Length: 574
Ligand code: ADP
Ligand code: MG
Image: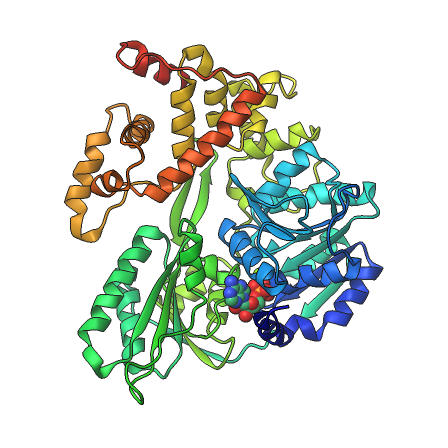
């Protein structure tokens, strides 16, 4: 093994889960299911899968022996990627070989993979073709306190699978203490890993803040000016806001001159490139000159950093109290991501990030009264605020028709289920008796929203499957339009040139076409305020959708662009 391997090993052995390694292994060996609760940063995600590998004693998967892999699910793509890379490094192997990851539209694993990190949504997809999840010997469901839709559905499924497969083991891991709920649902023993949390002092604002972004920036600058050494973590809600904050913080710190130490300001959000994501683990910059003021690392993140990724060295947390959350209005079938207040449990997690290595401080940019009276105790399970159509399609494909009696941890309202069934019936995915139709079966194969997969399946009839493919791909990736603060007007004008009166879908199609016509030229992207990385991702998604189309003999075709019917046909399909 390399020198680095031993360096990392020393650090690993200091993590709290290592103190309970023997206890974990004993309980793991004696039971089919184990629940493990431990503070964020205690080493659950990176270490437990390695303990499990040791316990079941596998080094590589011989091809003949399929039931040998360990899966560890993550609600977030970023976490699956980042953590698997870290574990590959810890095990001194190349990512994609013994240790891999699988997220929607990207599979980095191969026949030798024995430990696979994957999103909960991907494991659910695998269960569609492999209902007993036969390739796995152990399944670890991580971050269950997030209560994502896919995790909740996996719970119900796995309970069934465990009965049919006595040789399968399940580990359920959570960062919060409401674990008793999971314990009684699974009827399994619970191991608690005590956190080593240092005290964190909480500061509230006197009065409500009118602009939380400004307030957050001011607070960071204030911390840098007057607080003792230690890194800063700021929670904001999305890419644009985060990039904006990073620029402003750097500018303000630069204006302070050499009275203050140097800073490294780093963004963290899901569409960031893996290389940039890795940067948050770099140490703070050294002082500019010997004996000068110490440097600080400032990470500006979405709630990825709340429990999914742990950054060492954070002493100050700035919490404006908001996050982008999925909100569903069942009356009008509309599901959207809205900036909304976080829960008390979330606020508590955020605060915890400040006390991992030494006593810390948490600056809450809301009043104490607002914390007491306005915040919900817990974040609502996603199951209770989602459009369930996609999930129902997945379950029906697995032969689970009786959704009313499915063992949900928190069952959705019957009314919400009915509406989703109606929507699927309207799309032709299920018949009047609630059975999956041929169309529905094909639709369920696409990792897309039912509306979108329907569009794709019917598009050959309207002679526009090429165009619908491009639109679906563009809708599956983050926003491709760049809007730098300094050139907003130019960016808006560039975007308007792609605009089409018939709305967003055709605008996206125009962007994709123009990108291709300009031979994917980076300069063209730059000049037109288009994020090339996003367009590349769209291209990749498109190729995968094409492969699924081919599997079902769905024809690739276009209407002549100069024909009057070009846009008309697309409109008919959408
Ligand atoms: P938990 O799942 O209990 O929150 P983790 O296993 O994610 O804890 O983290 C354990 C330790 O590994 C933390 O100190 C964290 O900072 C470190 N770590 C995780 N990923 C990386 C990485 N990519 N680079 C460096 N350190 C990492
Ligand atoms: Mg974790």
